[in-house]
Image (tube, rainbow, N blue to C red; front, side, top):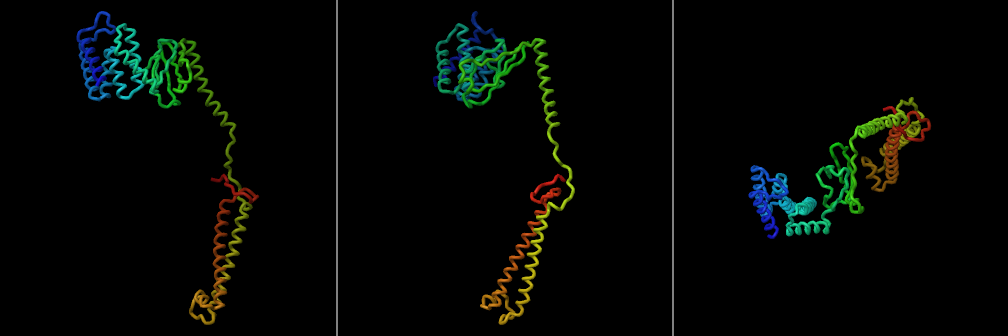
Length: 342
């Protein structure tokens, strides 16, 4: 409840200041009546949203009001709303800027400044944010980090320490400069990050253009040179040759021999089964189970014929595979290769 009261009290003081007009030594010029009315409406709306817990709306309204009338008091409300919303880095930057502006204005509100300093210290001590200091030349350069506008001292949420962040600087009459860094870099080095822009003189611009052109030309040239030196793949057709398929032919021969043996054995078994004594009309298996010695012998030979048929089929399949994969131009017959005839 205390934070609600504090925000409301600040809001009322802002509204009163706007309504009465600025004191002679005020830092901000008085807004025109239309802007003033809009700022009053936004501050009041943001304060109401904050008190009911709609922090996202409060942040939006306070930011919009601050853009129209950059008062430190509105900035304090921005910081409070950002903190309530869980935006630690944004809250830290707003608190930091509020303390700096109050000190420069010479109209310190000790209660608010103390609150801002304590909140900022707590965010740092609990490891929620990391402070980043930057030295930039020229010092009037505009800075952005990850496409967000920042000052030479800013804060980042302490999340992934090794995640890359991009710091960029720009100034009129100077070439843009950028620097990649991680939070681990910031934590492990005592010195500020340093970003130096190059003055955009005719000579510097010409040198930069030549360097860029050289980089553009060098890459294709090196790639072309590498392409010339790379050996061309051998895709010429090899002359037909049967010598590489010798293993396939041998396997086909084995398959044929096994098939002949199986056929002969099977034919002999069938011819003998017709003359079995005491088993007229019965199968070889039933006669063998009945104890007929001749039937037992024939059943064994029939099983041999089955095995021969299986062996013949396997040999024929193997021969087909060897024939298909045999290298057409390799006379060794010892390796299975793939020709370039596709």
